[in-house]
Image (cartoon, rainbow, N blue to C red; front, side):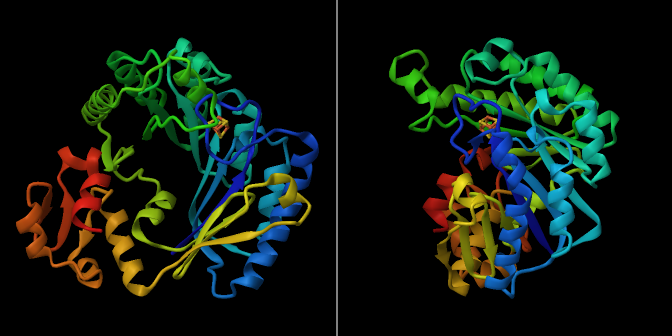
Amino acid sequence: MSGLYIHIPFCRKICAYCDFYRAAYSPDLAKKYPAALYDDAVDFFQTFPSAPRLFDSVYIGGGTPTVLPEGMLADALGMLKTLVTIEEGAEVSCEGNPESFTDKKAKELKDIGVNRMSLGVQSLSDKTLAVLGRIHDAKEAADAVKRAASFGFDVSADIMLGVPYQTEEDVKLFVKTMRDAGAEHLSAYMLTVSEGTALFDMVKRGEFTPDDDRTADLYAAFHLTAEELGYERYEVSNWAIPGRECRHNLKYWTGEDYVGLGAGAYSKVGCRRFHTVPDTRAYISRKRERITDEVMTYAELAKEKVVFGLRTRFGVTAAALADAGIDVKELMKRAGKYFTFDGNSLRIKEEYLIVSDGIVVDYIL
Ligand code: SF4
């Protein structure tokens, strides 16, 4: 089954580390965005008639979808539902930031069928949050997670690892606080400092020095605490109480198709991967452009399935390995230190998941 991704690019304030596609919130642009999404979808299904229209997962990501004024997400979803079918029982996730996830917003999202909230907490240290340019504090973040749980959403909380002032104690406190607040899912992303961000300038000025070894220690502390509290790591950066894995994100790692709508959104349909140019003004004025990133052969698709599957604790099946032309016996001879193979599935050993990208480059690609 396939997934539908809807990108809402607007943010109230641009965070110091952010290199996602996002745009400063403007009421005028936001007002026009739902109709532009509909127009995008009409064009999408005309251009790619074989693209899926039946979805068992929807992911409204950003940016910050919760900054949209009341009624706009309802308008957008309402119009899109005239073109696509969202299965009964589908997972419908929405990203949000604590300061804009109010009671009123929670109720609105619940009413339009959202059943999973992914909240950008990032840290529970006010000092770290301030330097990252976040506009919430630790208390607001914990309250937002509690609010989401009390409204009956499945809740996920994000943290960044390797950020300024962060200690192992901070990371452990994050996991415990989120567990107590009702988060069944956690995502932990290791900081990358990208050119063009405020954090990059801080590094250049010598005000902060990223440290990969320290980040690896923070990751280990996070993982151990999460496991102690009942979460299972199911992908390099994702942990869930069993059964609460994000069905939508799993599609990215299992090679399923996804339709991406919105400025800067990515799609995969069959062998083709493409994205819409990340320019909100052009998008709204219907000067949208789609760029093809890759057209893969069947063999390349099969290889990609292995590469992404190895990021997960489910690994890849013997059949998928055979499709990709990988001789598992020979692989185990060369690199058995890093993999387990039980006759049916190949997996990267738990302790090496953090360096899975390097292992895949060395032994699979
Ligand atoms: S809220 Fe998210 S998308 Fe927006 S600027 Fe911050 S990190 Fe980027």
